[in-house]
Length: 384
Image (cartoon, rainbow, N blue to C red; front, side, top):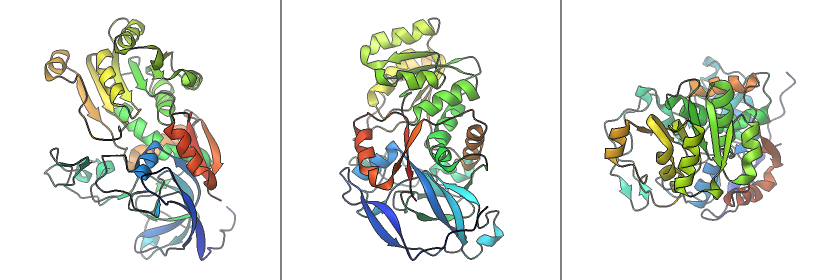
């Protein structure tokens, strides 16, 4: 390991200058000082996620408050620890360690709060306490005392960021930073979703939105890491990346209506349908279609978050779910343990993110490409 760079007084950050629009701006910010239990990280790379687009445009109804001007977005950051705050020297993290910052950048570890299922205020969910535990149930990914990177907490579209020493994610030595970055959200989220599906090796799993940033990683994890048989569904131009990622079959969703899509999946699965469906795309229609080709006893896992006013999953009639013994579940992000496990998959070459590297100045263009559904795979920002 070479010598660490000198810490400057100011550094570059990419902020949302007009939340509600696709617009970012490079600004110079003052260097923060790590507080008790915190570390200062010199970031080299950050992935760009569709969730960042939703946060920036204030179109994600799952968040309780609108994004404010000046917010630094991003939640897939990788860099080197350059300074420890008071008490952080007692942690396992040392100066010079390479670590990652995820969507949930810090948790309380002891909360007993969750969303009130009736707490929809206008188009946004309220944070009314209920009796459901999160951290104490091992689900720290939905801790409601958490810090969310890129949403009311400075994110990873910047050269330096603070993080809690006890929650940053160690990066394997043989995994380069640009490759590691997407694993901190797209990787851990889809890995957790596949585990939640309860599918068994050899069973058919459908990935809806299979050519996107999350989807193509889900295809690789499912086919190469967990021995599932995979069908990928997406628009035609994404067939190549889906097949390269390990899908046995690809279905161009633009060439089918709901009935013919379900018929095609059933034909490919011996007439039964898929044992598990992971919906990675932010589409209400994709959720409604999925139930038509979910087999008896199968599981639908919700991952993609549709924008706009929350609506229920069409066709999720209790009578049908009961008769078919089907399950609908969901994953926001995985745990710190799951993040470490999926980074190990990447370090061993089982998962290889399809990405291109862009400079910070190209972030607005990247979001525009993403909003038009033209982005294949992932974009990783070079922050140096």
